[in-house]
Amino acid sequence: MHSRAAAAATPSSSPSRLAAMVFPVLLLGLVALLTASLIAPKAHAADATPASTHTLIIDTDPGADDVIALLFAMASPEHLKIQALTTVAGNVPLAKTSRNARLAREWAKRPDIAIYAGAPRPLVRTPIYAADIHGSEGITGVKVHEPSQPLADGNAVDYLIRTLRAAPEKSVTLAMLGPETNLALALTQAPDITRGLRELVLMGGAHFNGGNITPTAEFNVFADPHAAEIVLKSGVPITMLPLDLTHNVLTSPERIARLRGLGNQAGKTVADILDAYVQHDMQYYGLPGGPVHDATVVAYLLQPSLFRGRKVNVEVDSREGLGFGQTVVDWYGGLKKPANVNWIAEGDAQGFFDLLTQRISRLP
Ligand code: BDR
Ligand code: CA
Image (cartoon, rainbow, N blue to C red; front, side):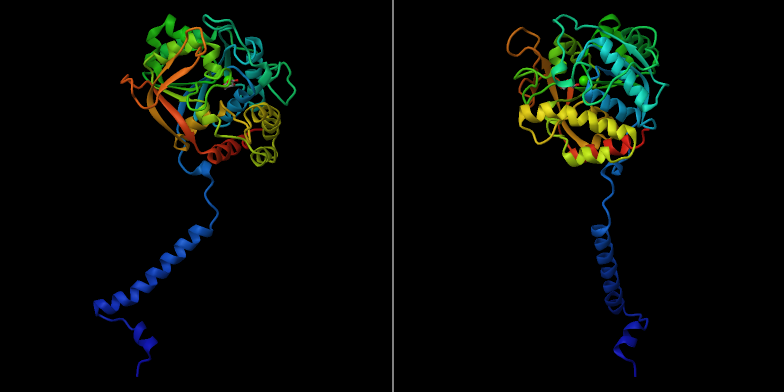
């Protein structure tokens, strides 16, 4: 006589009996899989999607957050093929933004990257700086020195024209972390350079958040609104990462501590810069942490899936008055004008800091 267990274990040709035997096994397997996926450590958000690749020029006005963005980008050579850095007057005068870009290059140990100095002042308006936020040297929290490696010979505007003219069609991404003077000058002198550009990815502007230099204007646009107007009308695909995004991607003591705890010099440098840099914005805006504006551009280049935006029409107000330097964003499309900007309104803050920390860990 067969026991029930023995009977259940005996192969049978009846389909219903087969199903009755196989189903519990499948169910058990499924439960085991689900349990494993729930208790297994989550994949690092920074590893969630494959990173994008860009042939890249970075135009910058370092600037504490620019320096962090530059370190982030220079730590990602397999994805960001940096052709050169170009500097512009902005947070501090041109000599200091250029010195600070050279410092970032030295800290990242990337002597292969040329740095060209560009425009020493905006197109039309009186120059303004942001030493109250970035300190008189343009980098908070760390000591600065004169790096041994010099600037490249020649001007950033000439470099942009020469390089974009020689580049294959739609091949070069230009990341812009400061006032947009250099590209505006290049576009004015050589409108044909748009052909070589794949995309512009800019930190700048404000809509839902309001401004940070006036109630309506964000610093990079306010510092040279006439340049921003030229760039926004260039016809090149543009992604903008405005204050609407960056004021929601904030440091926390834990996020800074993770950078400091990496055990390399770069992690300590970034943490020291941030500890000093976030103080102003936390106090002024009553925020629980500080934005790292320009570094979001690098995260967007590497992992656009961390961000969400909308294609909209954006124009700059360059008239004297309360709206000077404001980005006027037609979020609801009421003006029926063509969209010229992918306006990034939201981002995954933890994903951003995971990616930043992972990349900074690769540096000396
Ligand atoms: C922008 O202004 C500058 O102070 C920062 O470097 C950033 O590019 C934020 O408004
Ligand atoms: Ca900047």
